[in-house]
Image 1 (cartoon, rainbow, N blue to C red):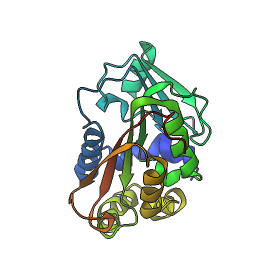
Image 2 (spheres, rainbow, N blue to C red; image 1 turned 120 degrees about the vertical axis):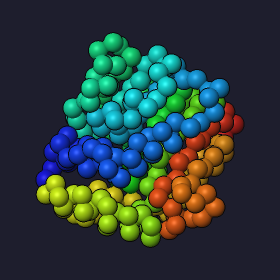
Image 3 (cartoon, one colour; image 1 turned 120 degrees about the horizontal axis):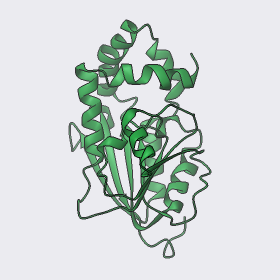
Image 4 (cartoon, rainbow, N blue to C red; image 1 turned 60 degrees about the vertical axis):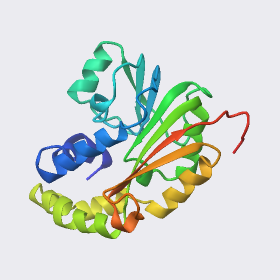
Length: 228
C-alpha cells in the first residue's frame, strides 16, 4: 500500500464513516476550533491537510484558506466548493521548508500531522516563522503511544481496519514515526516565548498515558523580542 492510496481511498473509510471512530474524529475537529472567538483570521494555513477534511469545521470568516500537503490528495466536496469560490487554494508544500513569507498568515493548523514529519522541530519553527505576531498556531496531538490510546486503537481502529482489509498496525508503524513525549517537548521548546494553552481529553489533569489527545492553542509573541 502506498501513502497516496491510503490517504486518497482508505483514510476516510477508517475514520469518518460512522460508528465510534466517526464520532471521535468529528469531536476532535470541533475541539481544535475551540479558541477564543474574539480572534479572527484573514488568512489561514493548514499544514498536512490532505483532502481538506478539517476545512468545514473552521469558521468561514477568513478571506483565504491555504491547504497544503506533501502528497497530492483529491479534495473532499466541501473544500472543493471553497476552492471553486476562491476562498481556498491547494498547494504542495514540505512542512519543513514552507514557501510562505515571514509573518504572512494569521493562523496555522496542524491536524494529526506531527507524528508523520521526519524533522518535526524544523516544521514547528517554520510554522512560527510564517505566523504573524499575535497569530495562532493550533495543534492536534494524539497521545500515541500512550496506554489508553493504544488500547482504543487495538479494540476499535485496528478491528475496523481489519473489516476493511487493512493492516492498520503496519500503517501506524510506518506513519507514526514520532513519539508523543518527543513532540510535546519540541512544541514547548519552539514556542517557549509564546503563550501556550493546552486542552487534554478526556482527563484534563493527567499526562499522555491516560488521555487520547492534547490540543495546543499557541499565541505568538512579537518575533523581534525573541529569536529561536
